Image (cartoon, rainbow, N blue to C red; front, side, top):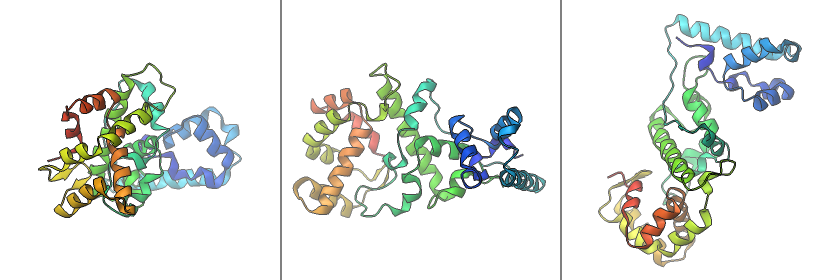
Length: 269
């Protein structure tokens, strides 16, 4: 059964009806339609004047009830949760473009363009919430993300969360972007060891976490080591970012000493 607590507050399109109420939703971290209703009951004077938004709320409730009469169930997805809730702050600082969803050898990233500019916080919210029909919010509202792509998004989100946890163990700070902590030092090491890292990653590998590895793609990775054409530079920059984004400085210092085991993180098979 679909409940208001399952439905994302975004379906109300408050930004369209009332920027003032949209600001309240953002400031008070209102995530679901149930949260919105609860807030409205606590402070009715702030909402009663916006009749079009209240009409939209009635439409959402009516659509939910219709879907429930048809026996629809909410489609939501589970991902790893932080034991330390303060780490969620970092989710609000990073966008989906840092998720490992696109092959570095692909010229265009349009297949994931709908997710690139949304925050990790919003991506996680959309995975765990629905629209009024019970359809998953991410699948419904994010362009180019169909049901078949959700598994890859979940894997990428979990890899991101694992990295945030690893980074959090290196500092007591929680008011910073933990994902980019010590980023410059990490990128410097990866860039310096680039040839060795690529050689390790492509040797006998059939599939990375971002997709299968063909012989043609292996040649592109190898070309990015020795050549300086535009595509070589793009691949190199993407790979330096990917490796530095999903490892810690101590792990990369071990790579510099010849211990490459951490790179298995990027290899699926």
